[in-house]
Length: 224
Image (tube, rainbow, N blue to C red; front, top):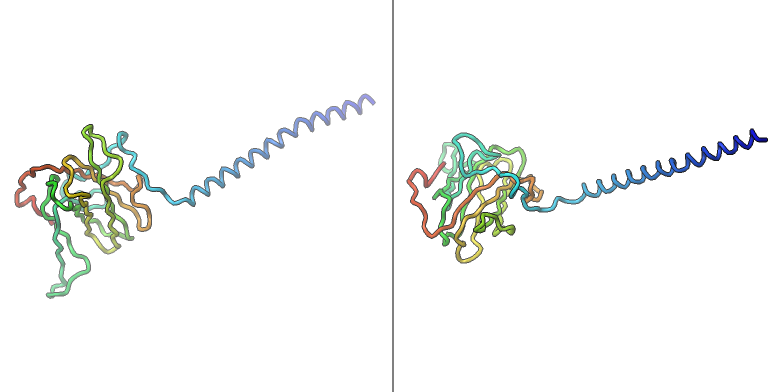
């Protein structure tokens, strides 16, 4: 009888030991399933527009100084100017034009007067396999050198696969541009995505609004 009692006691001890382990395993499975469902839900959410996070932490590539024949990002060249002209290639016969006009920047520079209605960022890109969005948003720098978090304006251009030239237009928001230093953030994104996202930020260009503008030589006023 004592032998049977000992066996029953051992069986109860084993059951008492296994029960918590079983519930622990069930808990682990539930947590794993919950984590997977949360991950799927996050993947279904569209990416939100967010400000670039590189301010104060990393330095974005600058397109202000470019070496000849050295592309930057997708750009063969990118210039800031007062305006631009449209030039058409022909097939050798008058009136027979290609579908891809060239854009020629006019009035190159990085300093402009407060009265200028718009500033243009003109560029050429390598041939694109798929349509893309080129975008810009510009900020006024504070006296401390920090940027105002809210951009003064934005512009987006959709470029189809066969096009190589484009421009972004920085329009003034009032009667005059406020005098000061500005930073233009450049973005490139696939068509259909939110362009103003940190992962799509490819570089910056700086410009100044001043009452007087330095004189440019004829060679600096235009570029092909």
